[in-house]
Length: 510
Image 1 (tube, rainbow, N blue to C red):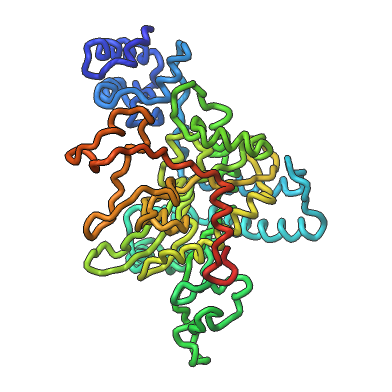
Image 2 (spheres, one colour):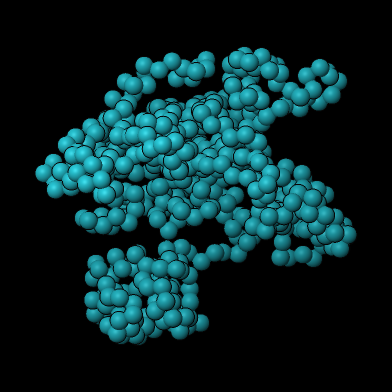
């Protein structure tokens, strides 16, 4: 089949004729319902569509990058779909539990790339705790929701209910009300949970929970690790609780940081049969073509990192992460000033059509408001930084479902994703004033314009013999010649040297 049309404009006759020839080719690869995997950029080569719908999609959206790369390699057959069709809900639940059980069975196997192993009482303790959780979930996965119900068990009902809650933004109160109605409506006796709390308690055994860490009202410190047992802030002496003087009542903290541990979420990606293979896609299946960038692994930052840390790059299962954060108003009412900051981590081992999906964007921190943490965001990042340092220095024992063995999983943050004001909070470099540019650093070209600061001296980045450097017209530039060289780019060592000259603003912060 002629492949020249895939590079043509979608409005051209050559592209339209090429689509027709492809449809004739695709008719040889349809299922019993006359469906095939749609290779358009919108479907991402993961959805089954009829031949007529595929024809329309190719004319509207064009080919996906995956399919284009596949045909450039000269294949004469349709590639297999990116994602397998979803199984029945009950099978999904048992597959998930089987993945958990596989991990428990392999707990005494040696770790690939690691030296530490569990022995004796440690193995018995882990197996006992995990086994108890598995047994409880297995009971709920087999228990009827009500007599004669064949579509749902208690566990599948709870999973779908809470999934519907998240997808449709239900409140906790609305879930409670729905449960009450269902308990009355379904035949008696039934096993529908009594409350939203009971549903959450049941799913707690699946893991992936979160921790509440108390914080100082003025963002001085977290009551965490060395400060965990204190009732007052060691910096400003502010009480930890709202009702500190009332010993009889339950103490209510003034500020709470929600921390979602990252390690179990990354481990779950390897333990699941649906994602274990995708976590090494960047090494096993990525097409490395000179001059084309389809994935961060094609970029220079990724390749330079591999050269700098060859021991980390040796195992493609080691996780490369991106960190993103910004403030938002959770109430959707702009007249109410409130700023809450989520910190999201994205694993870039996954293929490009997966790593940017919501399901793989991992919330790790939920920094409370109502005031933006500003420069004190480093206080709230401490639990995540501690975990990332542990994953970098020592790693975590993880079961790989694809290899059916354990390995030592390590992780590294490759970059952060944020706007310019948030960059100032994360990096510590002020993005306002005369030295606002973090790249130019102390050599930032700035000057005052009445009551503002301007950064209009850009001719210094031109070649030294460029004609614009000698332009002295006030209509086009400043009226002066610009013969300065561009600022020197600082290395990581230069920036660390600058940081060591600074004094920590709070105890324990570097």
